Length: 161
Image (tube, rainbow, N blue to C red; front, side):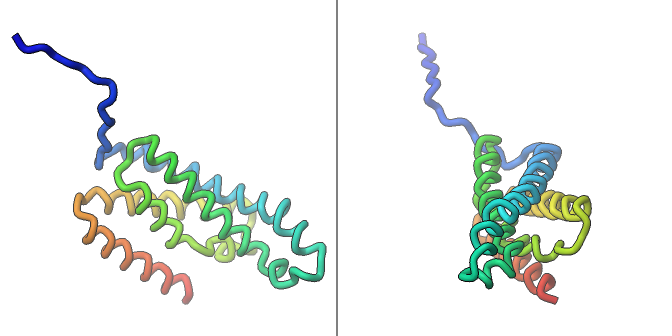
C-alpha cells in the first residue's frame, strides 16, 4: 500500500487570476498612501531641510515634485510587498509600470483642492493597478512587457502635452 507523505514545505502557488475587488482595494489603499506620503514628506522633510537654508533653493522650489517622487518610490515598494503577500502574479512589473505611468502626479494635481488631489491619486492608482494586473495575466513575459512599455510611453507623451 502506498504511503502518503504531506509536506508543509511546499511553496504556495501564485495565481494569475484573482478577484477584481482585491486589486481595487490595493489600488485605493496605495492611492491614499501616495497622497498622504506626499504631504508628509513635503511638510516635514523637504521643506524644513531645504527651504530654511539658502543652499537648497532649487529643491525648495520643486519640493512638491521631489516629495511626490519619493512617495511614488515608497508606494511602489509597499505595493510590491502587498502583492507578494496576496500571491498576485508578477507584482514587480505591476508596481514599476504603475510608478512609471504616474511619475510626477504630484505636479499634475498641484493647485487642486485636497479632496480632488486625493481622488485623482486614488483613481490613478486604481486604474493603473487594474490595467497592469489584467495585462500581466498573460503567461508570456515578452509580449506583456512590450504592451506595458507601449502604454507607459503613450501615457508619458500624453502627460507632457
